Length: 557
Image 1: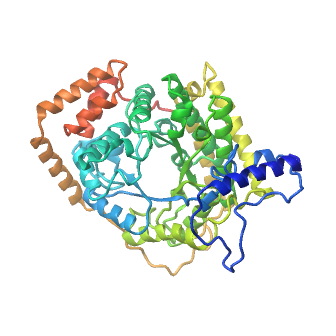
Image 2: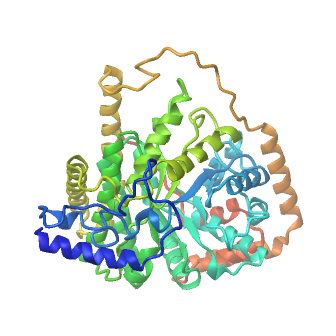
Image 3: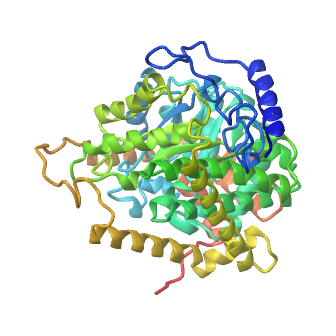
């Protein structure tokens, strides 16, 4: 790009920056020296390929979505939390919000993630252990008691039974008197990544996609601020993928959901802004920064060129980041504070829109109050003390970072081409479905995980406290343990709730939901009625399993 084009771009950026709202904050170094809001090539200089880097707030968004960077608004601190029953988790949420958290992120226990009630025989021993137990809308009432849902952005990390859980959240908001039109937050709902990596599905892919399409339509019409899909690469990376695989599989899943929206006759300029993303921030600092920058660039180009998006917001890739759980070690767990801080800083320098920082003890158990506070303070130290928020894309123009960004982008494009080749019609969706059926994704992730583990065992990849610097004076941590009484009490409350509700109303609502499932109607209103009647999660998912069948992964060797 020649000097004149670069200068014209800087002038465009300056006009947008001047017109944008900025925070009232000190944008100087620790020593008091002023810093510019963005840096670029020297005046009068050309820069080959600068059109791929650009300026913050303009296509291809490599350097961020907003001309102000974090000077306009910092990322949302959204700590992922949930354990035990709804009352216990409600107390943790109030602690997080009081300590400066900007939104809530709900972690559900395994029975809930699998669409089972707490008293299901398969739930025994798992209730409340890896997240909060939610059996019906009444649990949602307790979970958000004293928390104004109309004013609090709420993310929920669940995919298989995401839609039933979402309607229970809507019922809780209704019971608070909230205007549902104003609700804001994100539902994960990403079923593709379940078949690729996490394996928490209920049905065959097609019925799940039916529900997701219904949800997209309903939110676009009734709850325009709510994001019905958070396309997740986090679990793909935690399963062992490389950074490029995480990026490519995640964005391919996102393209699949765009194709789903278009197949429903939705306007890409209206529904695409409701898609958000969820990435892992791993320990290789510069590779992660490059991954986030490449993600924005790839998404914007494909949405414009392949799917016809024309509005700026439809081209924006907004993403939440969580530091890498798989990087945490049980050995010398206090070292995990350092790992998390490095990973969080990579997410910030990559321009994340919201962030969760893992607690030091999460590889052993659910976080204690103290470790959860340290994780929260990690974000606040980065935000308030490091100066990382003063300049948009501080690493932009680094030869190393730009080379990494280009390399990860090129690897991702090669993977997209392979996925399209898998399908018979050349669409991403067909390729994903064929890749799931054939085990293509899981095979490539397994191979990447195997190669990395070999490197660790040979000592080529070193982990402090595990295969390097193993001596320590640290003492054993006290960890949070979820009592068996949580399961006993949850089941008692669930039984009492079933006895007190109107059984006739529940059966009628479930029967009507199944009738709607046999038509082309949107299923959200019927499911909402079932939730209002206090139908349980297991009952809602159960009648749909009876109607649609369940999915079992084929055995592979």
